[in-house]
Amino acid sequence: MRYQFEKCLEKGKIVKIEIAPDLISKEIDEAKNDLNSCDISIQESNFKWAIKYEESAKII
Image 1 (cartoon, helix red, strand yellow):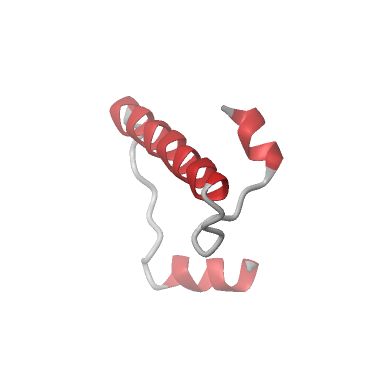
Image 2 (cartoon, helix red, strand yellow; image 1 turned 90 degrees about the vertical axis):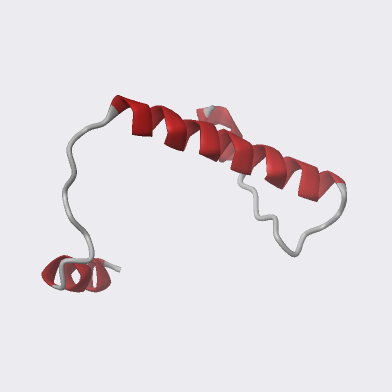
């Protein structure tokens, strides 16, 4: 993984951006939505799209 990361840096595919609080909030909201979708998929036994780690739920 480290090798791929370094290659992406070299190619300019990963760049540093300024901290933007509005983007941070948006990303956190999207992560919560993704986790909720995952929970629903698991409840419906739709495992094709859902992979859930119990520890992930503790973060939020």
